[in-house]
Length: 579
Image (tube, rainbow, N blue to C red; front, side, top):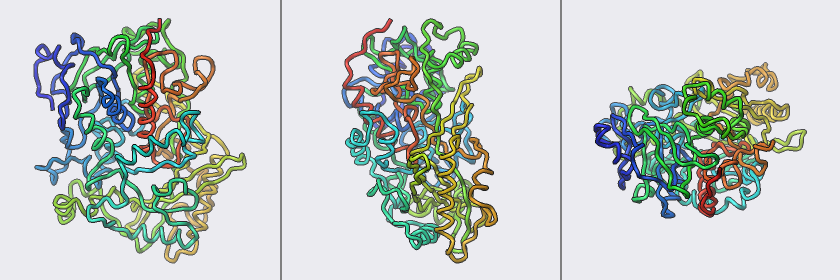
């Protein structure tokens, strides 16, 4: 980590320090003011998640100077993270490295989760890819072809998909000995589905077989530790002198003149960098990759979005420094909000064995910690709480739309023998919501995106009916929720369509990509090159641009989008100043 020093001594130098191979430049215990520095960057990228890290790697690989800015602290040990339980003391590992500790964010989110969002989101280096369960799915073709515009269909994304999965292939056996531990839940439920006629597959070998199929979970983990973008794209980027990483640094707004960004105003987050950092005059670009909430918030604070939201910013503490209303760009930022519709059911069976992953923080099983530390094997090399099997079904609605259901099972619930199984409604869903910014500069879900369409709801109900039918003959299986005297329709209707009950934390869509320019009544915020309409050098590359929800957990799809966007952006001519 950056050594604490007096601001006066580093005011000029801080912006020009480069990330050295294998080390993280993260800012120190004091804030470095960079406004007086002459250092500029070809690309300033805001957000170090599934969108930001890969595109930073690709742009620096092309020879451009790149600054990657993360508002939170380092996460995994490779990058200087320090958050860990006592049993990891003396090792280079943190809570983010160990797969079995992934659920710790729900028990102890302080310093990890974002504080300016009314939903759970990771504000650490790596974003969601540092805190999630690491599920890693190769998308179904329909995930692109149903939702995305020309130039972003499955055939267009094939090469980007190949590049992503060659770097991060994923694994169904995270433990380094190739074994799956505590597989009783998988064996019971998977075997029951197989007996009912569902087909067993290795999911990423058959990404388009998502109808009445089941298989093991696939994870981005590698070497028994968290892998993904932090262990691949960020590593290769860090080996280039053209790449710089700042953590603990909040992007306040994009500084722009008309439609042309000249830099980004930064605020120190306890330690890090503050002031205005500039892009290369005439040719530099700014890329927002802070997620569906973070990127939308930055657009709002930069004078880009619906007038009602920009007025909220104007009436906040940002007011005195906000760009004048004559330069506001009216775009539908915050609309088209979407998330997987989560519906939890719970079953129990005497064969299921519970493992206390939450207890692995303070009261772990000594043999398991020793095995993990020595060999990266055992239950702690697997994601909590023993996820699997996954299974899928496609429901064709009365409106003719095919809706994809993605079921995720895990060993936890009301009894020691429980499994909670969450149904995610994804590709094909048409319900949408909205997020907004308050005068306190927090983002909130103002219109939940769940089951606002009758056919979306019908698909959720039918999927549950089909699962009940498939499991009806399983000996000793007990339905805890819904109870046997409650119909699927009654059960689904009884669950409020609110984030507190339906949220999957797979938020997308707030800066939609498309050809229908939102300034003239369309629904799109960015064009087919991911460039914000009305600007010549501001881009969005993350889940914000997804027009609709995909089938499974979105991390891999976001990385694929980032890879493809890099090609698009690199092919563009230099921006010309827009008055």
